[in-house]
Image (cartoon, one colour):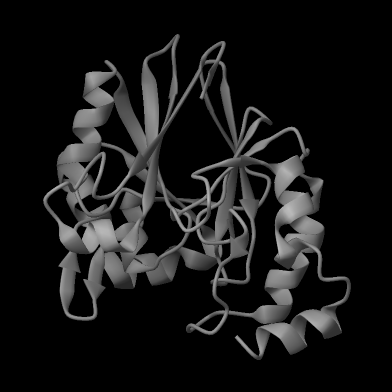
Amino acid sequence: MSNDALILRQLLAGRDFATADPTAAQMMNFSYLIGSRTSRECVLVDPAWDVAGLLAAAAAEDLRVVGALVTHYHPDHVGGDLFGLHVEGVAEFLARAAAKVYVQSHEADGLKQQTGAAESDLARVEGGSVLELDGVKIEFLHTPGHTPGSQCFLVNGQALVSGDTLFVEGCGRVDLPGGDSAEMYRTLTERLAKVPSSAVLYPGHNYGPAPSRSLAEERRRNLYLLIPTLDAWLKIMNRR
């Protein structure tokens, strides 16, 4: 996506980076490059699996990486141990880039434990915090449910980068450590309801029938957004 100053690139593990890694291809993670056409600065969202490849993608666009944004601390998004497999991520990013990692404050300690990052490597953010590149406004939305500190990024009011909170025709799991089914319902029905339907959804995995979709269409087609009450939601989610 590009509009005026905004550059947004959706990068799929196993196809656009980490092309020699069959596990990365199986996991179907999206990383994102969000940049400013005017300042030539950018941030990477969830740099994992192939940090050098993601930095090369930025360099190919003549963009300077000034930060990393993490949606949540699971290893397929930030690196670390994944069932005995080492996944590249934040640690390798910090070794290669002189830049901060922007993490939701509830998630920061988990990120440090998962990746070995130091407190000085992090920029703790809250819901409503804003990062601005030249002509590009990134608003941090605290969206608990998948994990306590999951966050989404609303970019120039027109793109919602959602991590594992919301997928095309799906939503994130709530049965992993830190998951909270009731909080996920509140996130989907209250917190994300404030995002305009004109925005485009960019999820953290390529799990749906399309890699992205307008929120207007998602709100019509995603069954998880159509469950009318918390009681009904809990009955459905407890059977997953």
